[in-house]
Each structure stands twice: as C-alpha cells, then as structure tokens.
Length: 161
Length: 161
Image (cartoon, rainbow over all chains, first blue to last red; front, side, top):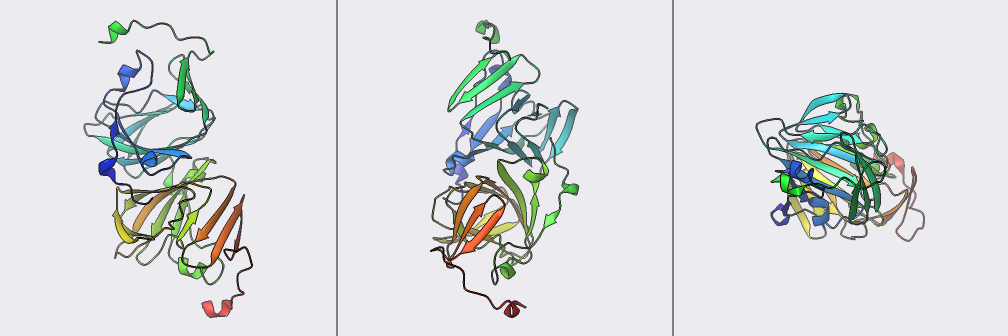
C-alpha cells in the first residue's frame, strides 16, 4: 500500500449503540482509513462532526489505547474535569485503563474533523461514564449490558421516532 | 490523560542508524506525542522535516503496521513505483509484511510535518530497500546487520565529517 485514495473510502453513518442511544449519534460520519489501507493492528478513522454532533457517548477503554488529532475546525473534549476546546493541529491521548471517560462534541457552527487511532486487541471492554452501560467487544461482535453485566432495560423503540 | 500539551513535548533529533547512514538524517525532528500522552500500544509521532530532510531510509516492516497523515506542507513519498507528492490532509498506510519499502522526503522549499503511527509489538524486523541493511528491534534495543544477518562492514567514521 501507500497513499490512500480518499475518493474510494466511504463515509459510514449510524451507530451500534442500543436504543435510545443510537439516535443520539445522528450526523456523525466515519471514514475507515486504516481499513482502506489494509491495516489490521489498529484502527485509524477520520470522524466528521457537523455542528451539534458528537463522536460517541462518553466512555473509557480498559484494554486499548486511543489517540486523537483534530484535523479541521473546533471540537469540545469532555472529561471528568469538564469541557475544553481543541482546534486543528491539537492532539489528545487516552491510555487503556484510564477511567476518566471522554468524548468529543461539536459545539461550533462549522464542521469539525478529527483522526482517531485505537488499538485492535480482539477483545475489549468499555464503560460509559454518564449512563449505566458497558460494552464488550469480541472480534467484530459487540454486546451492551449494564455495568454489572445484567441486561439493559427493554426500550420502547417507538418513542425514538 | 486528555489533551496533549505540545509545549512540554521535546523535539528529538538524531538517528539510531549506524554510520554512514545516521548522517543522512540531519534536520529531522520528532515529537513523541503518544509517549507524552501515556500510550504504550502504538507510537504516535509528529515528524518535522525541513527542506531537504527525509523521514528515514527507505524500509518496510515485517511485524508492525504503519499509518501516516501529512499535517503541513508537501512531502514526497518514495516507493518501488517511484515518487509521488502528498500534501496536508492526505493519508498513507503501510501494512506489516508489505515489502514495498517507503520513506518521505521534503523536496519543497518549506517545512513539512506528518503524523506517523506504528504498532509497538515488542519485537520487530525491518528491511531497508536501497541498501544491504536490516534492523531487529527487541524492546528498546535495535541491532543493525546486513540483510543475511552478518555484521555490517566497518565504517571509517572520520570520513563522515
């Protein structure tokens, strides 16, 4: 491989979160650059956030390191200490096991983009800071439960519309 | 962790290559952003190339994936097929085991910068495309030999100056 042809990398939308959380991820687009380049050991995704969109629910990883570079625009990084703004050319790192959950929200009036790199360990467990949810990733499968491992409460998916 | 304070990330110069190759790496600066952010599973380095500088000798990795984003300026990516220019906002991927060696050279009149991410496997073997050299990395130790594992020829280091 070599240079990645961006014209041939689709912009993915949607979310693997269960209801009602998937509906909170509207607007986010993701280009899987590492996959497009044949990489398997870590993911390298370009995330596109229109105004009002967020990168994910606030979370932390127990197994995999994560690294972010803001590529365009301004995003708000939210952690335990509160929100801070980050602009193009700034970087952030979230080591595995650091329980200070994070996510990025676009509170500006313009599109923002960031590159996010994360290890692919094969098995991962993530915890969501602001809600009682945990995710277990095993290969390509993701299972969401409460933090104690019990099932999430059933959702009235009709109310999402 | 979270946002990385760039003011506190030193710019490293120099090279671990043996003579006479180390002298060919002049001008290159590297900021170890992932290390600064406490990451251990992959390296994430910002490489600063003044005009005329190169990222490395042309090489490929047998164990570790590598990913690049050009952050500022224009660099020339050189692989088997020849040189191509890459500008800010473009990406490249070099999967482990792909024997098409690569490096980046700044042939422009302005400083260029790129972000490079590479897995940290603990043990790695790299081959240099244009010279008879191989590197074996074991933890933090690097050993350079000919491609067949025999010692590199002794160098008259006086001739470097």
